[in-house]
Image (cartoon, rainbow, N blue to C red):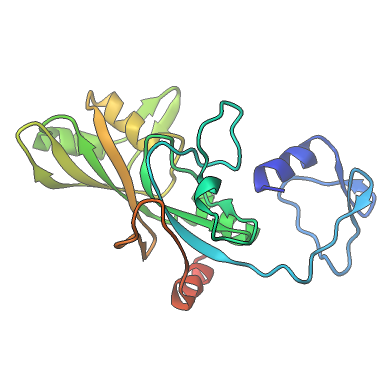
Length: 225
């Protein structure tokens, strides 16, 4: 199960721990506790080893294992990955860049939960020349659909005749957060690309390509608190 499907099963009362209904976020000892899903025992697969991959997600793919609307999913780009892995967080349909995939649920929670504050870096191409005043405002909190949004930092990379390129850093990554921040400031985003998660960088990985993480990259992720 994906984490989302597992949480739905728990919320629906399908999971028990030692005979009592399980709660989302509850910890268990797989060697001592009895965990049941729909009355059947859940056991840890001793052969299942954690694996970690980086994908350069192109635009036009959704960050999901399947889609009822028939849109292309990132799983279609994982033909050389033999293990069943899940996206860590999301990149929306029209965004591109670095996407981590793993079967390590604990690490996924660490990288996606706001309390851990793992910073993600994006390059944004705006469809206009952004002024210094607008850059300041982009770094200030805004309210969109009743939700408070704020980037950690906003930095201008370059200006063109009819466009601006900026670097944005986030530590929360709420749904469409960057696009909503720009929309609230009257600026249209032409392209949005994630280039780093923490100290992991997309580098020269080509669109649609996937690679396993290096040992030092995995060690860095596991050290995150």
